[in-house]
Length: 242
Image (cartoon, rainbow, N blue to C red; front, side, top):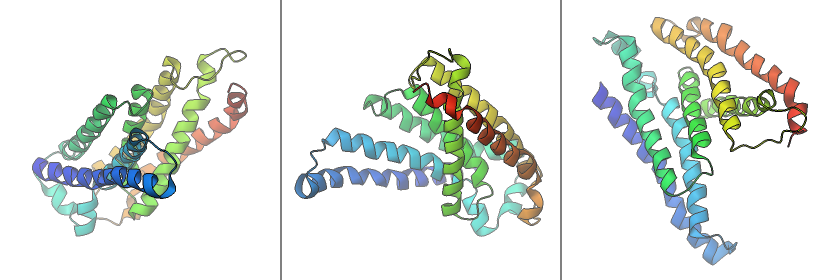
């Protein structure tokens, strides 16, 4: 099974890397058509960032794509493997390739702060796994993941005043405090999300999907609601710090 998951991961990885073809195309298009004066490095950084955002979403959304397409969940769970091993074999190759993208980005200085941006990409990957498990299509899954990540990102910003002086602090998105806020926000989001995912996956069977969504309804939806309320409460305070 692990070999199959490695192959599937490399396939998704390769498809996402096709976006890098836009680098030379963009350079030629700018030089001879629009003539905005973009440098090759500017185009490279932009396209590479897009690739690093697309890959974790695609990797998470397609985690169970073959089982959904072939209706092979029954076969998957009949393998002589625990469900913990199954999910580990599925996640590990995809996560390893994401880490490779993040490491490569450090050599080209793609991000101003690799710790915060790299961590956020890992959070995006795990959000994609949780939501992708139930997503009906790649398009709806992409929209749902984008909205939830936006809620996570905004909540991490709103967390900033809790760790600083409310009256004099100015937000610094590359500070250690900002990283701490991202870590805490991710924990508050991914722990309940992971609980809902694992509870569902552990008991998942051939019954209709709608009968197996209870952990998502009772855990994921209230978590998103709590995050939205937190953002609403602290939004005005945070904007005064910027």
